Length: 80
Image (cartoon, rainbow, N blue to C red; front, top):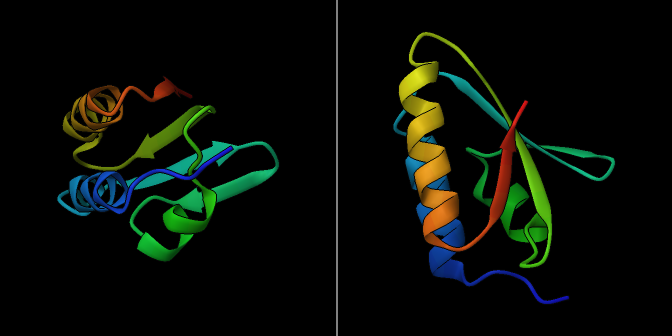
């Protein structure tokens, strides 16, 4: 499996950082803070199903934006 492009990782990270809410990615046995570019760069793979958990004051807006950015890059994502 190959990793995602740097551009994709940066766009996901920048989108997450626009929000105050906590945004974490669950994948296999890992939990990654999506606002951490380093965490994303060593974790995200193209052919995975990702689970996002978002909590906070702007979570509805964050959920919409995160779904959009994952789908834009043809990544499968579920909200938990």
